[in-house]
Length: 78
Image (cartoon, rainbow, N blue to C red; front, side, top):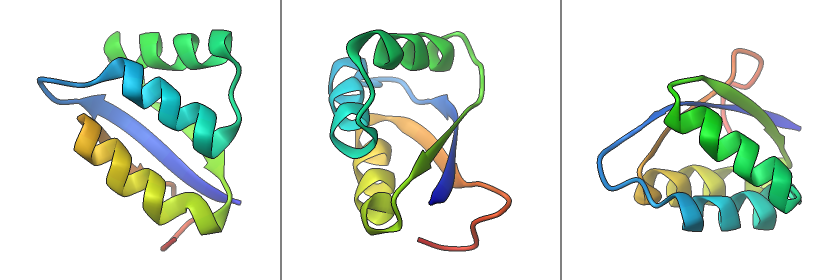
């Protein structure tokens, strides 16, 4: 698994589509997606584990949707 940290968000952050991305790539339930999105909006840093074959798609899509992401300390690349 690859670790991704979501460290913030930019103006125009599409929280609904980001929640859908979390479902697609991570399999999160509705309540988990809401909790993660709310944490991001409050300024918390969240860490997720994602399959390596979904990493690049997640990073590109999340960035497009307005999330600020980086690879975790134990992950040097997707």
